[in-house]
Image 1 (cartoon, rainbow, N blue to C red):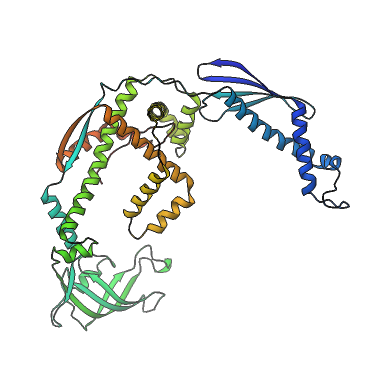
Image 2 (image 1 turned 90 degrees about the vertical axis):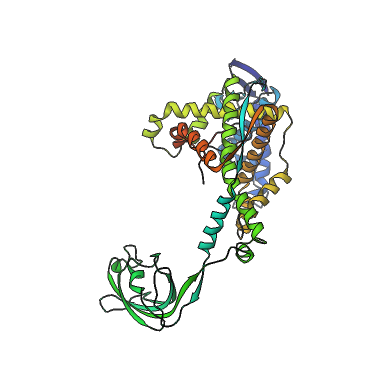
Length: 457
């Protein structure tokens, strides 16, 4: 095998590679020998088919198989020998091939640029900490209490009114005829919410336990039976119970109902949940401030093929008209992502940052805790999708790099309340709406670093 650098211009290197015909023939003979043990042909005992006959019958496919393998092996070896750090997939240009001939081809590779890291002394950013007022927590507790209200039986002579809960059995007809699914047992309706059929709740106002009430209503337009869609139906309802709402006390019992130990624990969980929502947005704003400055102070030559690949990834769900309309903006975003990715990766490598398998497992466990009753689904997702675990590892790697940067720059720490946080988030989102409409961000450990739109959840 002979390897020569044919040309080198910028980040692009073209290698000339020649593999002699003897080496190729040797691999063909090896494959024929393997095939002789595998193939059975009529008239020959297993393993006794003459190589010449095998070559006559399978020669072209064997040659193609061998050449594919030789190209993979020799191109990898050439890149390794020349110590090239490649960006993206190399391109192969066959110059000479065929049985009884040397294999001669050119390997075109785009290399990763050499990056000189700049001092971070002048980089500065705001580091926000959210402060949750007690009133916010109290309002959330009242909301939870209202959502989990209890109902108590009314006296048999007391009539149902809005906000009461009515339980009933029904049978329905359309034009006097029964239909599939026309009966219901133990149906519960909280009057005023209008969750059953339009106008149904109002007609139940005034009923009492034990009463039979005829209600006229219109079946929905999306009824499973298209023939019944928008049809007028008559419901014969037997009222089983009428209950009035009872205020749910904000106490330890409510807390336990919500999965907390006691009311103080529930308050703490609420505060953490609200804080997490805002902190996620505020942290991303801090990250954007940092990345913008890091991108600005570094000059990096970008591999063209990485830019093309990133644009393709960004625009794969857009039609041609949308791609052309936002071509310039998409190219700008792609270049920014790649540049930041290369810089961050260099920072990670220079500081020997790594993500262990244990850290990945710990993050998966953290996600599981945040999704009660869905543990099995989360575990199966990562078990069946190795790329998801790799993506998670990339996100953790990027987080480590950002934390490293924060330790080296000037952070102006600010404590803000929810109103102030919402104003900061709103102001931040204004200039990013157009750019983010056509591109979503995602973390990457090797070639991309992203920014993302923040919104209050």
